[in-house]
Structures are given as structure tokens and as C-alpha cells.
Image 1: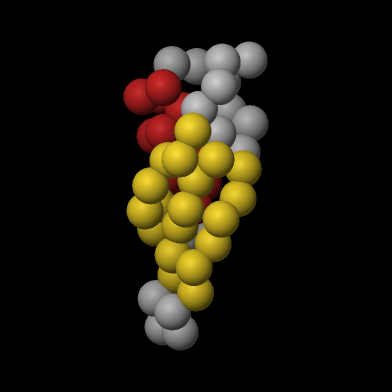
Image 2 (image 1 turned 90 degrees about the vertical axis):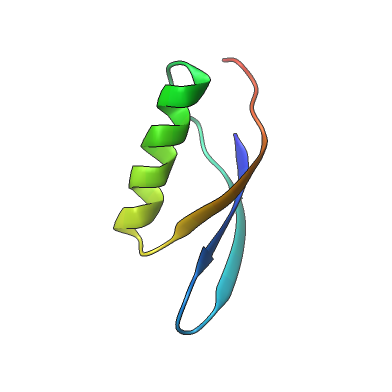
Length: 51
């Protein structure tokens, strides 16, 4: 899964990839939780490929 995320104060933009399992909705939820733990907010999922 390719995604864009951001962090506020100071503003920082991120582009990265992650390997997650489950349905698209489950994977998105996992990604949001993972990013939140790092102080990031998911902006957009750019692509998702089944594994």
C-alpha cells in the first residue's frame, strides 16, 4: 500500500509504503492506527495491491 501522510507542528509531509493484511477497509484502519501512534495523519492511499 502506498500512502501520503502528514504531521502538524512543524508541518512535514510523508510518502511511504506499508505491507498490511486483510481487506482494504481493515488495512486502512490498521494504517491509520499505525500512523497515529507516530503522530501522523493519513492523507491519501495512492495504491493498494493484494498480497
